[in-house]
Image (tube, rainbow, N blue to C red; front, side, top):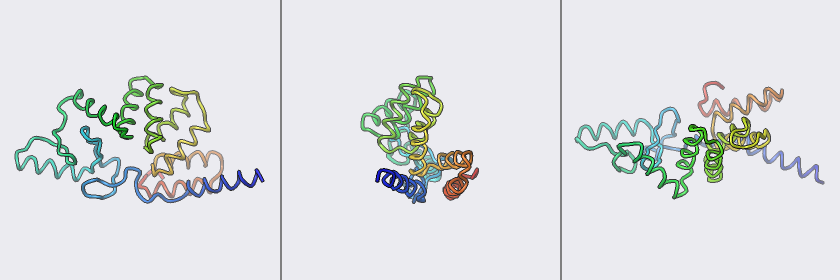
Length: 201
């Protein structure tokens, strides 16, 4: 019975893993509602909303034509004039449990070499459902940064990022499956990554 339960759990996990995501892990632009592309979008430092470059550009044109001060295209607050102002906004978003803000703080700590604190923030962001935080945690576990090296946990977080629609995670899973000579699984991952716009697939 135990073997059957384990097999059923693995089958359910695979069903979830290989399901085609409905949209990008980033969702849609909150202004025009078109799917966001992480290479063609900008995060606003005031409200942490990610807006497509088209809407950002349209907002800049509107401001120039009307001779207005630069504002966020989403919340219309004035753009922070310094890093300090931007950090104050970011910290306010962290206090409100914004997973993107929490991930951004974690990434800042990681870039400054404080991997243990980065790991804490990224774990919190992942618990709140941030796909990129899941992906970054997989790298932390793979490399043993800020946490003891653990391939099993690294794979778990990589799969969670892929399930959430992160194409890089999907591509990395394909590479791992190919390395383990499980080519049928690798091909499925590559197809999903390609359909999400990941050119290397």
